[in-house]
Image 1 (tube, helix red, strand yellow):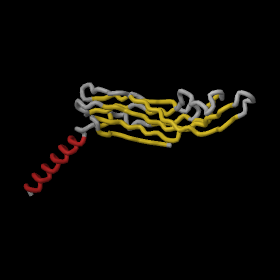
Image 2 (spheres, one colour):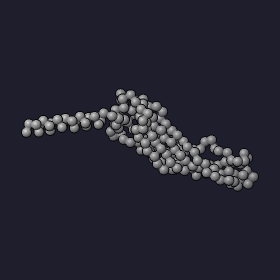
Image 3 (spheres, helix red, strand yellow):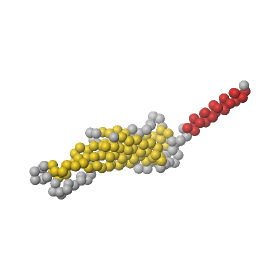
Image 4 (cartoon, one colour):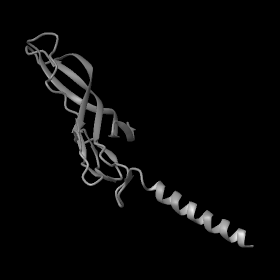
Length: 158
């Protein structure tokens, strides 16, 4: 009977040590969690929330947001202002936090956002035509949070 008690006690010690070890690595500081990204179609902007991570040691981090979009380019003939050769232009916008250095084993990752603007405006085939960008659409985005050069979290959307 005594052996069963000793085995049970040792089992509880190992379980407790395992639970402690599980929290030793990088983890979100409550109430922070995975960053959440939203698309605002009215402003053609993708915004991702910040977060806080503990247990990172001396590892730096960086959050990067890549937005893919398309826009319609209209070319206006200056003589009669008719639209000539409308076509779609695909482009990418990128935003980054830059390198984030830890303080006391913690990282505060700021929010990241970017607006899908096509600048400079592409030119029309005829330099006398006036270019106009319309109908910007965000086709996809990818948010990646790297920690010590390794991907810690990633999400993407339409």
